[in-house]
Image (cartoon, rainbow, N blue to C red; front, top):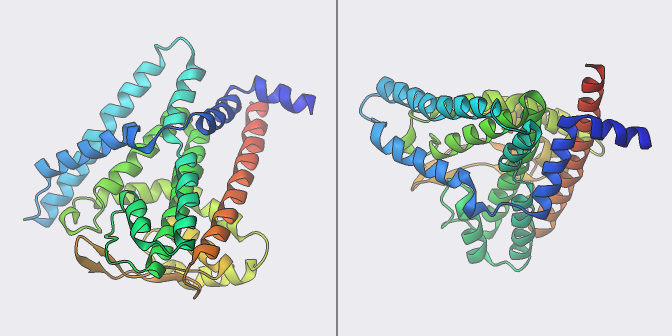
Length: 317
């Protein structure tokens, strides 16, 4: 045990990761005060200026250039500042802390479970609306259960798992860059007609960034009961969903608990046809609580395994 603690403190990257997790739980950023909110609003303002829907290829080119205009200067500034800071580890910790969003997802899960249990659809819609691009006004209680489950799965997958993965690959700057790329994909989501095809480059880049961490996390979800059934369902349904990383994660979570996920959704008043994933049970409060428990247990397993791998790699170096 003493040797394990010595390795932890000798390994700056591991110390930063655990320090960020601790700080995040003790002093989490309120969602409304996070820099991602300002970034999101600026992205929408930029899209209003340069998004031309009159020509498909021109809109696609504009979306690509807009993404580069947002991301490249930010990355260059962050990289340049890293060479000037007095303590690089604190710099890494600050940006990993900004990229993480475990606590807000946990808060959402707790509140949403209670609202589903009380069958309070009005409050559930109000709680869910800021977190999704889809319209929530017409959702039934069963629809809320499905939408909330998808939001929780992708929130943990992207805001925790993928952030930690990219931190392990490239440090705090890589984790923060991933988070900002994710916010751009959400701000310009082509599921809303006004961002089609302008938002396609942002979504495709995020899909590339997502595919490894989300698929690895999906494999962790598979462990234990119903692993073979979940794997069989994964082979059947994976090709029906356009995003490879989210597809695996949603299917594995749905198959594990036999929950019905995804399906048609309304964006800006227009119905979008999406393939149904997972099992056949529409998520209610009990199922949502089970899903939360499953995800949190696998998240801690991810943190533990990533710590072991990072420790082994840096010790070898």
